[in-house]
Amino acid sequence: MEVQRTLVLVKPDGVQRGLSGAILARLEARGLKLVGLKLLQMDRELAARHYAEHQGKPFYKGLVKFITSAPIVAAVLEGPRAVEAVRSAMGKTNPTEAAPGTIRGDLALEMGRNLIHGSDSPESAAREVALFFKASELVAWRRDADPWIIEKP
Image (tube, rainbow, N blue to C red):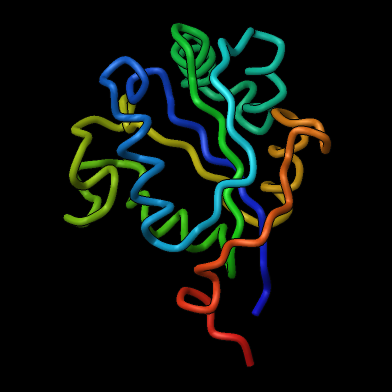
């Protein structure tokens, strides 16, 4: 069992629609543990670092404009294969192709307003968590329910 940490961002559309709690609740209900949380207004500098791999692409300016348009919620979640668990809970990037039962499949309609970002690999997760959180802002804690969620060998 590989325990990972991953970054989740509730994007401006999710915050504006009052879905931050519902989105995080779905991930916690799945069994992931919240170890970092903050509400922030992303500035252009942080957006440029976060979306660095998209610089030069036609949609880059729109991404930066949108993600800086209103507050976001940044969270770090922890659990076995957390990156994979969050990605499957989010659903496909295009909400009209996302399966029912996923966050995007149930709550979003358009790719440009798809509510949530989740790291796409353990390497990206490490980089992204470090962009949004200092090590001192992440809490290591023992959850009493872990034996009921995580099977230990």
